[in-house]
Length: 319
Image 1 (cartoon, rainbow, N blue to C red):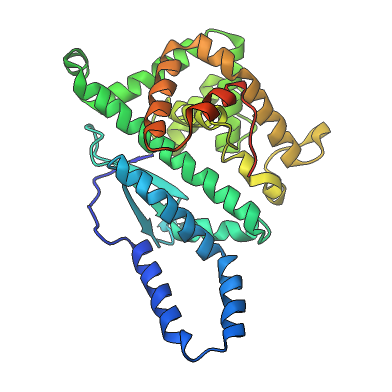
Image 2: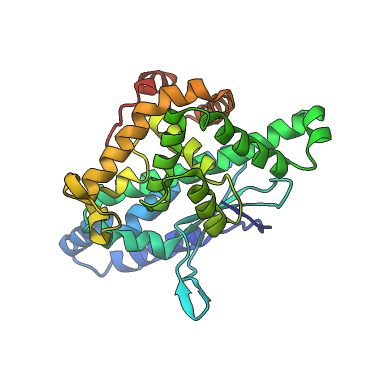
């Protein structure tokens, strides 16, 4: 997540892309052979661009219902110390301090690049995109719920100078509650290894180093832990799991007895899934945060109450 001042754009690049696509279809209808048109349409429906824009189109009404902005960027990255840095898949932006004007930016090129990572398999690619999109929705809802809680409480406004300071306090308190037990500490470190793709994170100090390196502050990982646990409780794949055997293309970890990186990742994810009920017992603050985030998502029809209750057993639902 990124704290930035964002502009309200009435027409996102996604809207423009869809309009261009529709114009092209209208222009070619009268001149193309019907069979050719049918084949092209079928091929287009399995293209990464079609899948990506389709998922964005499904997502946008949910964000609008929550008053969260959504836009698509075609930025190709920035240069730092002579090296080209690709943008993230998504960025959850908001005003520094107040957490106002929450806006999610989807970065087109990194998301499209995952098509090859998923071996050009439409089902696997769609699953990957859906998990990544859901991840960013949960991030945005976290910011939104903390902002609303802060603004409703005169006690909190007296204690903390702004909503973002209060948010940082909550994340730190969750860590403090969880690390009091070995189960909680192990779960935090497992979540960190999955998120940062870094097998060497084997202590809270190394986790803090990763948080500072990539996000400039301690405690960032907890917002990812909240997201991971929320996806688990909704009966969904975590976005890390949705990479599947794409992990083996990078060989990020030494796999040892697991044979493949994918098997190792699945084992780590299973460890985190099994720990979820205990984490909720160990951290009242985490439980409160999860309850608020889940309730907000349920208000927009993101998941039914029956599914949420069913998913308390933490079993994933693929596809």
